[in-house]
Image (cartoon, rainbow, N blue to C red; front, side, top):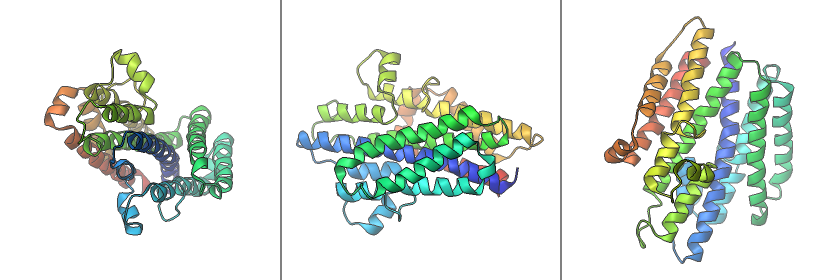
Length: 314
C-alpha cells in the first residue's frame, strides 16, 4: 500500500473517533456545569473540558475566559479549531476522498452522509438548545462509521491502519478525561466524597459509556480507585487503556507480518506499554501518582503515533 493511502486511512479513523470523543466530553461538561451551578459551586468545569480535549491553548489564543457559550462554540463548530466536531468531520471526509477506492461503499456512505448533514446542522448550532441533539447524533454517526468499516473491510493492511487510528485516538481520550477529573476537578470546598465529587466521577463514567459496566464489574458504589482501574487496567472494558493497547499491539504485529516482518520503534513502544498495562496494579499506579502515570501515558501515545508515521506513513 502507498504510504499516503495508509496515512489517509489512519487519520480518517482518528478524526472520526475524535469527533465522537469531543462530543462525549462536551456532553459531560454541560451536565457537570449544570449540576455545579445548581449546588452553588463555581468550578472549572468548562476549563477542564478544554484541557481534556487538548484545545485549551488554541482557545485562549482567541478568548480570554472559558465562558460556556464560547467553549461550546469552539469545541463544536469553530473552523479555527482543528479538533472541533465540524472540523473533525471535514478533515475525515477530505482524507476519505483522497482514498475513495480503498473504502467500502458502506464506509463512504456513512461518512459522506454525516458530512452533508453536519453542514445542515451547522446553521442551527448557535441555538444552545440544539446542541445536545447534535452531540447525540455525532456519537451515533461515529459509531455507524466504525460499524461500517468493522463489518465490510477486508482484513488486510488497509483495515489494520484504520484500526490503529481508532484505538490510538481512543486510548488518548480515555487517559485525558480521567486525568482531568483527578487533576482539575478535585473538589476544594466540600472535600472528596461530597455530592459534586460523586457526580463528577459519575459523569466521567458516562462520558465513556461505562457507568453500567462499572456496577456490573464491581457491584459497589463509585470509588475513585475502582473507576481508575476500570478505565486503565480492565481488559473487558472496550475503552480502557489496556483494551486499546491490546488492539494497537495486535494490529501492529499484523502490519509487520504483512510487510515481511519489518518492525521498528513503534512495535517496541506498543509492546512495552501493553505489558505495563497488562501486568500493572492500580495500587502501584496510585502510589506513584495517577496524574504522573496518565501524563506519561499521553506522552508515550503521542510518541507512538509519531513512530508509526516514521515507519509506515512517510
